[in-house]
Length: 476
Image (cartoon, rainbow, N blue to C red; front, top):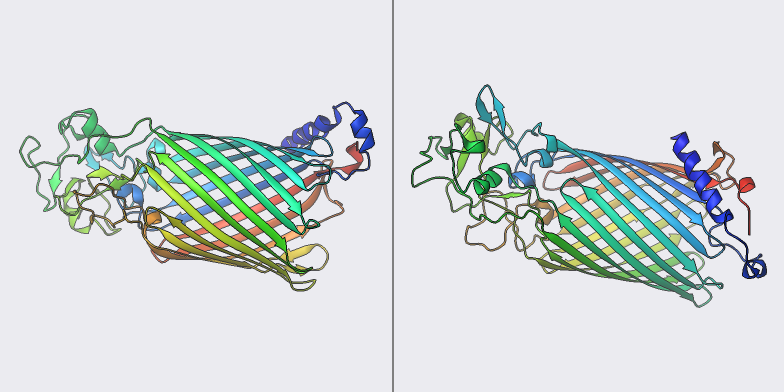
């Protein structure tokens, strides 16, 4: 960690000071800089969850997931008006959902699988990597700010490239601000589809090849079927995406107003248009109006929906299929109130609507409590409620005549609560250092999240902000 910080500091210090001064710089020598010194933000987090409605296994099964993520942001003042930002995130996760794309394991020459235990396959763990370059320019009077950014992200089944820009204008003696931003994301699936469906399509429906070779298939009564007979399991749709695109376009507007010396309000709204393959190709769907077929221990079929099932897996009827266009319209407001020198109220409300039938309400409250000169604690609470998508149904309740279908509980109707608490240490005078970089603040946060569907999660976050030592940063 120390070596990384040293390298970043050298780059951050050298870049702005390697530029040649111009007559304009001399004239503006006393102009306040947008960012006085290079800053480094380091954020690391651990997230763990579990539940019993995994989308990859059709709406039942373990949702076990662990994720370790680290984010590093370096903000570099290029001169008095311009700031260059480098942002990078690495997220390493272990997921039952990813692993159960292929839940089948050959144990003592017998094929086994269950939605209640994560498979030990190679897809069980992966990394998500994201990088963003940003640039912002402020006018001499600091009333106009222009920004631009470019973004790339990658994981084993998904790649993303994005870019965007924004403009913000302050007026009314800087008591009012209007802003507009836009972004475009050009994404591509390297689609991973359920093993049994992929095998079926690749082998033209031959139930005696690849995965199915010498493996018995059972009906819902536990009786072995004749694979060459007229009544057999088959995929409902033989088109499986392999290299499909997704496009996202976002336009955001915001308005901020200082109401009094103690209060501020902000209004915001977004328009989001998505097109392309918007469903997740890993996620299975089961139809309630067709027969069910299984691989594994036939004696456990009667316990299939119970987590005591340790050895039988139901063959999917299809993957999740959703419309190839989606419009999202979130709007909301923030209200912050300075109560006194010890207490601040931060509140947030958002209403969300989309044309897939989902509407949602979010309320967030945070009350930072200042304890002395350096320490602040901040308890928080978040409430969320949404209606179900038109295309959602639980496990084995869709109809084969439907055009679109999903059993992803993220698109179901549910209530969620999140309780959190954090502590923050601030040192405006940068007395503490890592090598020759001053520590500006340090914070630790914990949150517990729970849905009424049974999903729950724990999130721990540790963050640090460093500032280039004033004695080493030359001013222009």
